[in-house]
Image 1 (cartoon, rainbow, N blue to C red):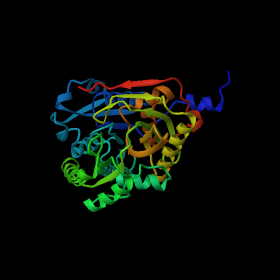
Image 2: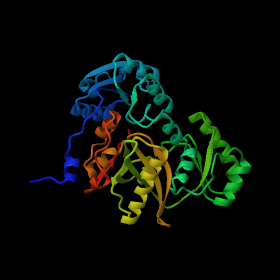
Image 3: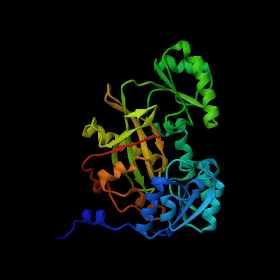
Image 4: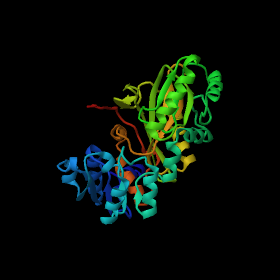
Length: 358
């Protein structure tokens, strides 16, 4: 049987290009996932771990492992200096941060760049831009991606908030510019509490994120949370369909599935096109996720943020697309462009992931 050109591209084995060794700055499931991909691509894996994980499976399976600190994450997995020192000592080509810990730390990515170590993720300035939710909304608008009606920039004082509120209407949502993971948000139901709520959320943002900047959006009451998985080599950007992450507790995701049960073909195309346009606007490279809220009443969608890393729920997209995202991350980091086209990405079946929070 003769394979078509499309079938040849999909079936072709990946290679890691110039990448021969990778330091894994994470633990648990994602560390195992990266170790497996490294083994299959012939890359030496070096794992850093805390004293608490000395007997863990990733330590046993990595080609090399080094303890970099005590159990506290701040003194080990979030200790950028210790991670960089280990990378230099083991002479690795790149660092894969996984998710959490240092994965969206722009300063850490910049340190990698300064030391000549490949950071497996986007450039530090891209992380910085997209990590600032106010700046990210501005970039989205430039790319023609719809955003939730609200303030254009940061809100510095009550009079500004009052002016935006009169335009947006109640209820509204005050969000910390540097927030994430469901933290740094406050719903305001009426004008009577706006001044108090604004002061409190700015204070909380300062304490939690070191940045008091906030912005205001219309509070949408009947929504779904839908995100698009993207992968880019800096020139070609592909999407791997959507994930529906609506089932949450305290703004933390519990169930993720793909495809979404509420989208039709036109909405699905629109979301994917918006996600790719945003990546091209910001010059994105590597794996990332564009998050949207979908208004069930108006049947429209709005950009809310971008996660500039691989996510916990990435296996959902891998299951329905048959594409190994971690291997593609490693390939791109090794300087090998994507060989796939968007036509090669075919979504089949349905996948669901449930998180158990202990």
